[in-house]
Image 1 (cartoon, helix red, strand yellow):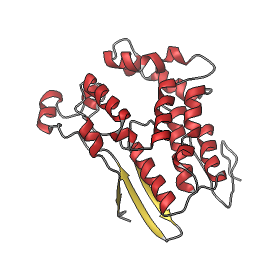
Image 2 (cartoon, helix red, strand yellow):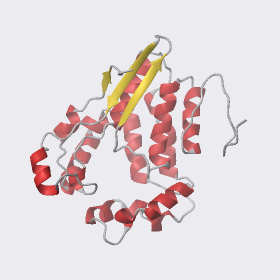
Image 3 (spheres, rainbow, N blue to C red):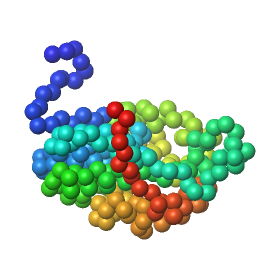
Length: 250
């Protein structure tokens, strides 16, 4: 056995490795329900968005490289969101120079693709690989941990406290209005970290499907919030988004 922080683990039917024990447990439960590696990945990723929010969330993107052993086929899934139709490169250069802003509404100029990636991977797992695990079950752990709370990791406390550009006195007013009430370091002192709004969002996705993020009431709320923040994203941008199966270069 090598000299590592954690003991080595060996298994014949599957392994789950994430940066948080609760996310790893969510992936393991997907296997226990008869699921495959895609199911485990979705369950773990959704849980990571709750228990490791300083590193990953449902507002980002994802890309997949999948080997379907039954078909001996390598698949690639691109779930990166496109830029809003209204975005003009010349206008952004004139307003912000050579770099896109990293904070504020103007920074939110691409459709979040991560939920579409989960949805497309789930559909492939169900239809092509015959998984018996239903979509809502994949989000069970994420919903519970967001609703009931969890013991925050030292990593989240450390990274959040060090994010002075987000949680410092001179941070953007929109950030103070939206992120501070939940994620400010002063809010993280309790024994359990609860994210009720995120729980409601994930529960709605579980009950109505991943399309809700792009075409349902949740999509309308996202578009309204984006407009208030000064983002160029619109409901049409969200509705037009698709995750694409592509040929991997190698």
